[in-house]
Length: 257
Image (cartoon, rainbow, N blue to C red; front, side, top):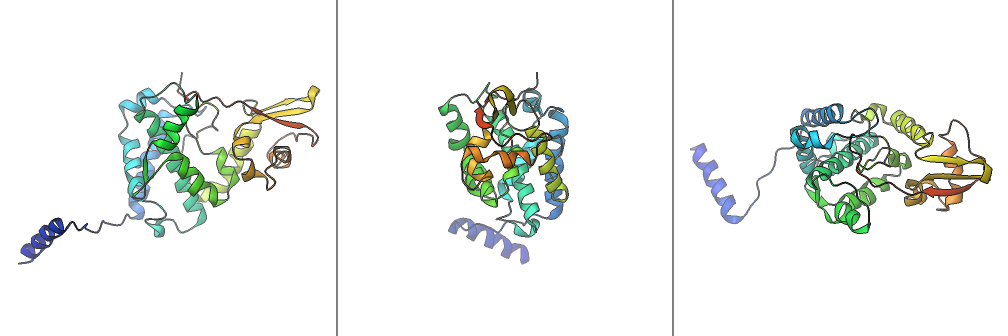
């Protein structure tokens, strides 16, 4: 009798176009998904933060498992899984990085994102799914992540090109997020790749990340006001009268040699 009632309900639901309630994700589901992402980072990312995209494309099951999880689960869809601000931010950092990595493979591992139209296609026109909602990497970063108000996030988000911050070989976790953000921001501002001093001309050239998101670092939005922010993370502070310029961003895919 019970089986007959269930069968009747399922048939009626199909006929009426009703959707059946989905099973809510559990904390265990989330940890399993994170373990898949962790395996990807440990296996295919080296100490310099470069990814072996060619090998990953042939063994993408772990990456796909994580992407499938975030496609249906997010802090918006399952808020009980993300009780603190750090839990929310950690989810978004891991998810952005994984979806960017997945996107490079889905795009056939392009050599670069040079030029406006290549970047438009990858960041804005390509759909990604997060918590059951379609969006793009561009909208995800600007509409969801940046409004959380943590400027150091720009030194851990990674779109898989050479001038992005170094991609760590482990997942971000809420318990160590603050120290990880500080450590990786310090690493960023003390690397010649991202910051070059010209003492003879009293100028500093910094990554274009600081140009892309100036207003996230200083209220004025003025590039010349960036030095106090940068100096918080420098081992050797930059003189306050130095002129700020920006290093052209290298959009070459950060593939392992």
